[in-house]
Image 1 (tube, protein in one colour):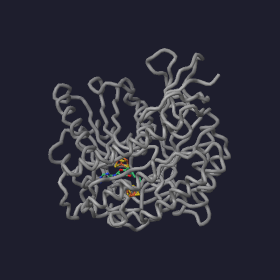
Image 2 (cartoon, protein in one colour):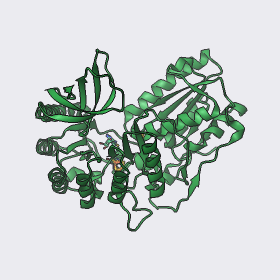
Image 3 (spheres, helix red, strand yellow):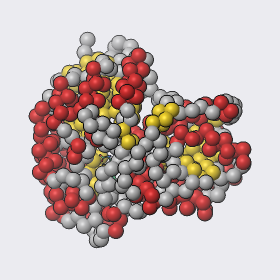
Length: 471
Ligand code: SAH
Ligand code: SF4
Ligand code: F3S
């Protein structure tokens, strides 16, 4: 048994790590053939992509996927810790599974992902959820086959969570959700330790994959006909800093662009590490999408300092405008937290001012959620929740206004769209533009997911655009 230890997870020292190849254990290959699994994924793209590995590992064991958890022999929750409601959702699901297990004694239930890295969650599981069969963490996801096999063979709860990042494991199998767009991890973990955020504790320190490994994966996607690749990391801009003296995110972006995959995206960018070289590369290559997610969190420099974000309102705006000026047609989206401890009405008004200046194309807005063990948890927080909810609503009105205004400006334009699917209505499809706008459009021609075509915009809504295929 390995239990998560927050003291360990909090350590900021950067340890040497080794690249190792994933080893298949042939003893358990197809051992559970005939059994089924249901996998529920909460949280960000990192977790979605981890789930693509988890699915492949479950298939290696012989499990087949089902879409109804009540029909599965094994249910696995890949959890998220970022805000309290993510916790509540996972525990709510565990409640339903407890009932199911009373009827279905052989049901195997497991929990993994970011919540598994939290000592308090694992304590609760140890005390009140003895019926949960296994728990493993983000750092040892690749051990899934042996952990599940042991939980079943020994019929005993298995808790296997490493508190610190271990080796960087390459070659873990992957079952990709799509055959036209793919996620590629480039860097794991985060060293920024924003004072509100739990990610550095659940995902460990920044560890870049070797550029050769990233480029090889992209090369295989090109060979397999993929149209879009999203380079993933909690802070992709820090790529390379931990392993190279002279190879950066700008170099990686350029090398990926040269491989000729039609569309390249990357997420998330922390404003701190966004270099001029990166901006130049984004502007230079047509296949790097003109779309940047640039979380600002707050428009008040005082709050930004308390958040430990390492930039001021002024330096953020300088970067924002530099990107806008250098990358033609670029769309910029953001994340904003309201109600950080001690945020005053004046601080909040500064956030509204910044939003009016930036006129974002999209924004994810949140109320601050206390995460145990983070520094912000200990700050005085006198503003009542009701007032924070009102701030969120006021903020949402302003951001939504600009979404619609920006979209209206696109009516009459032609945008390049990657088809993602067919909507219920006849001859109607949906997909995303290069600038990451959701477009619903009509086409007389038969299309399939992964097709790229030009669409003329005919109408604008707050969160989407309507269009027609250009003949
Ligand atoms: N690495 C990314 C953030 C990933 S978390 C970045 O820094 O850009 C996604 C978003 O969740 C954050 O940008 C932040 O806006 C929000 N978030 C993180 N911790 C939070 C908390 N404790 N309460 C509310 N929102 C939070
Ligand atoms: Fe969290 Fe900040 Fe790291 Fe993003 S950069 S994951 S907000 S600590
Ligand atoms: Fe959640 Fe972990 Fe992602 S906390 S947002 S799943 S890195």
